[in-house]
Amino acid sequence: MCTRLSDVTGRAEKQLWIAIDDLALIDSEICAFCDQFVAMMENPAFATWFRLMLIDYPNDTRPTTWQNGVWDEDHTSMNDVQLDDVTSFFRSWADESGYNLRDQGAEALAKDAIAKADAPDAPNRPPRARLQRLHDHLLTTLAEQTKQFAAAADPPER
Image (cartoon, rainbow, N blue to C red; front, side):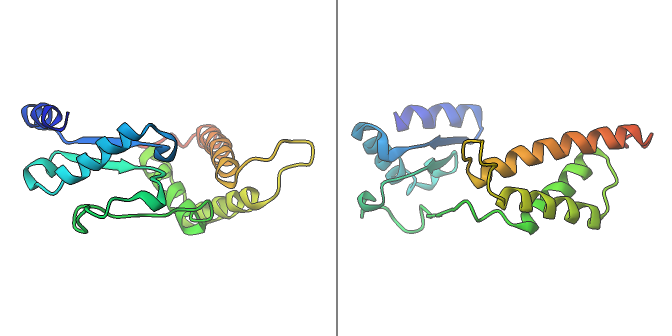
């Protein structure tokens, strides 16, 4: 399979990203394929065309044969997204949309979003994860900001 994928990407001259989630719950043959794929990444001619992301890889089963220069491990948590990240998100959104959102405006929106994400859900609602609450609030905020910019007769510069 690795050889066939390499042939396809080489002919197309396009890099292929492969993401596999919930590896702790997946069949052992798929994990064996992932292990073989990582071993193939030691070959620079193969590695040029691929990026492999293994999500929720079983902690205690990482093969000892993986070379350190071929892979990197990252552990994330729901608290990793902080004020600076959300402020940067609002700035990027405004820039890409052609809206003039001052730094103070982006930070104020971000502070509000973080505060709402960190607040507990209402007692009559089912609990949601912090990142889900943040995501939902960001969608609402972007819709509101888009309406405000449109109503202000300050159309985006394209």
